[in-house]
Image 1 (cartoon, rainbow, N blue to C red):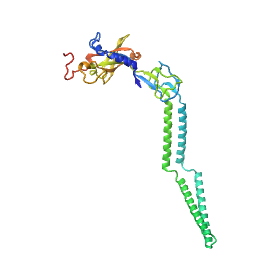
Image 2 (cartoon, rainbow, N blue to C red):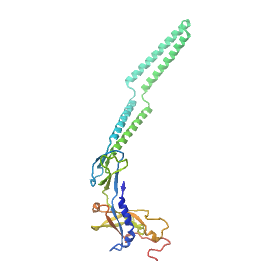
Image 3 (cartoon, rainbow, N blue to C red):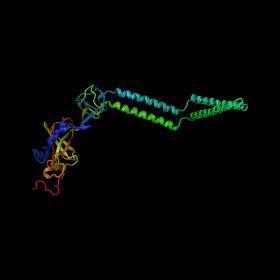
Image 4 (tube, helix red, strand yellow):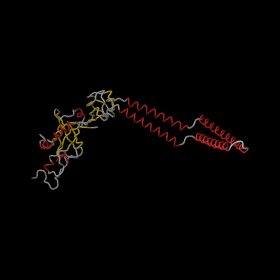
Length: 344
């Protein structure tokens, strides 16, 4: 996350009010527009991904770090325990998938076959008993209720035999495709949960996203920063830029990457630079129904990037002057219905 220091922005805004005057007071170079501002760099903020105790600070303020360097560590004991539980669930799902893919074991088939044979034998015995009871009933030795009980036993034995036969056939056919797909889906779900927790556990180790200098550490070891709270701020090794405000008569005439020069106290030579950003909206508005005199008081925020290795060592926050060659600007015709500049 990039930001500009609030105090520096306020200072630059106040200086921006002087830009219109500076345009006519370019010192010994009347052909240059002078813009006053401050030297800034974008700040990279490193936030806590979760509410956890800070257990280690690996750097101190002012340290130079490379991209990927560890800045701090948050307590990951709870996250590790959750990861272990999800890993166990994943292993269980993998075991179930392997079982359904392999199918029934030989011992299970033997057990199912034996149960089927026993059910068939029971059904045959029930049929023999039914015939015996029917014979006794014809001789009026057995009652009709005894015949009914024997017939019921035959039907139950035959149903049990059919059930055992179906179970044996199911084991012989193997696992259905749908059951294998369901088991595979359970494994994928468990692996996704494990990967998610592994990522969250790695994120508890706060690393520098870019190479730069540690500008600020906002928490001490033992404190518990809330989720999303800024733990460290980095100043990346990027070229600095002059944060200035361009007066309205000039803003529309700036070309993309408009060349400029930047000077500062204590450095006799000017730094080569270019405009990398000019805001599309003016500041200090009403934004409509403005006369030419009113529009000249508007300013547009701009960032002028310095070039060259020497600029990398300049400190942030110092006042600078940006010089723009007026002859290098695009022509600015007068608006329709209004007199040109300098016309009474």
